[in-house]
Image (cartoon, rainbow, N blue to C red; front, side, top):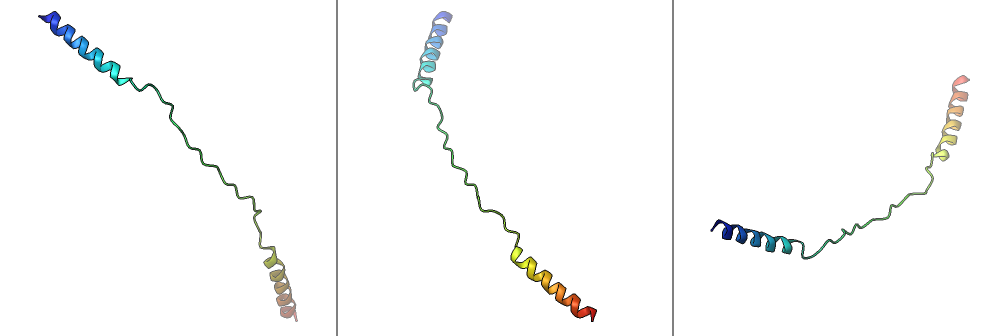
Length: 65
C-alpha cells in the first residue's frame, strides 16, 4: 500500500517535471539603443566679451577726466 502511493507520487512528479522544460531555453533579446553624442563645440560668448571690455575702457576714460 505504501509502495503504491509512493510510486504514484513518483510518477506524478516525473510527469509534471518533464512538462516544465518542454519549451527549452531561449536566450533573452536585448535591444541596444545607439548613443547620440553632441559634437558641437561649446561657445564662450566671445562676441560679448570684447564689447564689454571696450565699454569698461570708455567708462574708465570718462571717469578719469
